[in-house]
Length: 254
Image 1 (cartoon, rainbow, N blue to C red):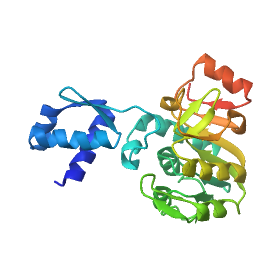
Image 2: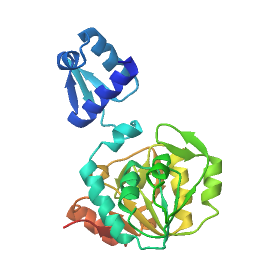
Image 3: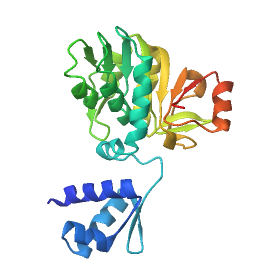
Image 4: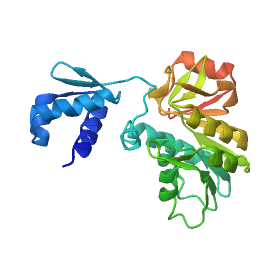
C-alpha cells in the first residue's frame, strides 16, 4: 500500500472515530509504529489532525477543507434524510441548480426518479451521478477543476451560471451562524455560490445539524437571502426563532 493511500485510510478512520491510537493503527496496517507516527505527523502538518500522546485526534477547526471523499462519509444518514426532504420539494419539469457540496450528491441520487428536470451544476460528482437519468437535461458550468471539492470553479464557471435563471437552488455550506449567516471555506467557493443565489428564484439551504453555530472563512450570504432551510433534525428553539425572524422556512423530519 502506498503511503498516501494509507494516510487517506487513517484519516477516514479519524473522521469517523474522532481519535486514533498509534499501536492500533500499526497492527491494522501491518507497519511499524514509527511509520504511523510519520503518517500522523504529515496529517498534522496539513492541519487535519492534532497529535496527542500515543495517537491523534480530529482537528475540528471549521476553516480547514477536508478531502471530498472524507467529507462525503460524514453524517451520511443525515444527508440522506435531507436529500429525501429535498426530493419532496422538487417537481417534474423544473429547472434547478445544485452546488458542489457532498450533500448535493445525496440530493442528486434522491431526485433521479423525477421526470424532465433541467439540472445545472458545477459538481463533477453530480454529473456522474445523473448521467443515467435519461429524461434529464444536464448542464455543466465549465470552469477550472478543483480536486479538493470535485468541482468546477473560477471565472468561466461564474460567467456560465450568470447566464441562467432557475426555479430552485439547493446549496449547502461549511457553517451557519445566527448573526453572521451562511459561510464556506474559501472566497472562490463562496463566490460561485453567490452567483448561484443570483440565478435562482427560490433558494434552499440543505445543511445538516453539525454545521449550526459554526463559523468559516468566507461569507456566502446573510440568512435573509435564504428562503428555506432543510436539515436532518429539529433545530433548537433559539434557531427556530432566528429562522422565523428572518422569514426562513425550516423543513425537517418530525
